[in-house]
Image 1 (cartoon, rainbow, N blue to C red):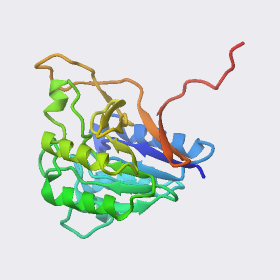
Image 2: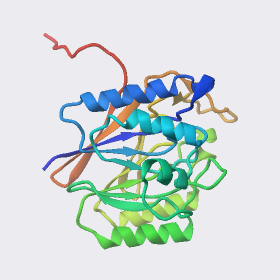
Image 3: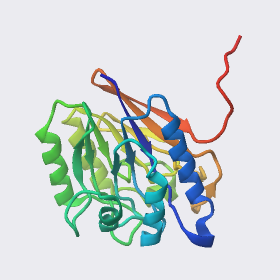
Image 4: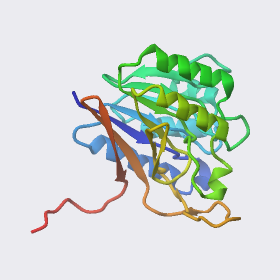
Length: 261
């Protein structure tokens, strides 16, 4: 049985004069998803839904994603507040707790982690969240699993990004965990505002581009964060016969398909 799980990340929706096109960008991503044939079976939103976690921004996100016909599963990003995600979008879990849960996507298991640190842009898991993750992975070692988190467990060789990533000790711990759990077929994340891949513990890590704006690719020491209007994109994870293949789909009007020859 084939299952298709779509992924959007980092829409950073704002409201008012400072919107800067963020709402239009998310609306365009939603249109792409609703027009796909077949429509994906589920959508994973891997964080930074809004820019300031305000009620007005969350209400705007809710309006924009309302046309989606598939279930939507949320991951908290460094611009998010877990309780706001619960209040406005029905995210699971008790108030005041990290946003971490498992979900059955129909032959694919989603394990969603919370890598956020309140008031900071970098990420961490720490002993309690890692213990929860180990218990969740150990509770089902057979079902193909997507492990989702906002901060990818990778280093990029891009100094400005590495300083804002997941704590190195926690990245190493995640790698050790997935090495012991081969049912984890893909680690999916966002945060980077670029499409990228790597490995952790022998498992492929997929980093979804932003559905809004991308981060300028700059390997120079001392570089600062800069955004560029490269094409936004989304991820599509296709589960088939116990394995998962990941695709990047640009968001935009690039004309109809055509055949060569």
